[in-house]
Length: 168
Image (cartoon, rainbow, N blue to C red; front, side):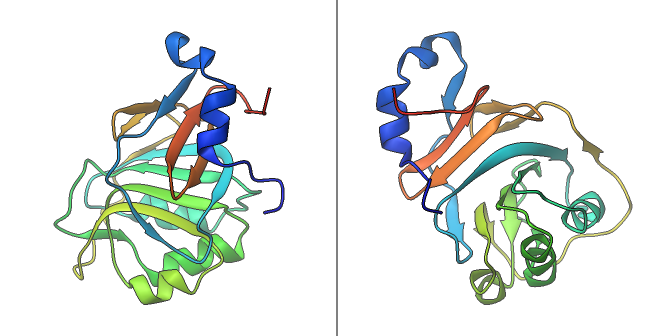
């Protein structure tokens, strides 16, 4: 991504947006996976718990460079994203997936042209009951993410912005 601007530079140039809450930083702690170390795009949100049915449906849709932000309740008992779903996300044009929960098949995920952030890794798969919600405000690592917010991720962290960010 040649037009990617580092998150630290975006923070410095848009510092005034922190006071209004228009710009947030996710708390540190998310692990980095996938071949794309840095990514950005508008957010699509999911809320689920140990059931990846909605996530599996979402990554099969056309991503159009968006970032799928998944509030999986912070559960690390089972993985809601694995190698097959990461491959689908990459093949369908998603820029990234952020999981407030666990992933698995990390070697397969790392081979995908996709950016992935998650709390943990576990080999156990999720259930498939068809539960969960999509396109609502979710809380991930202390940041509130609304559908359509802008997500910027690199090695320095993950930003959530109500508007596209530029250097000023």
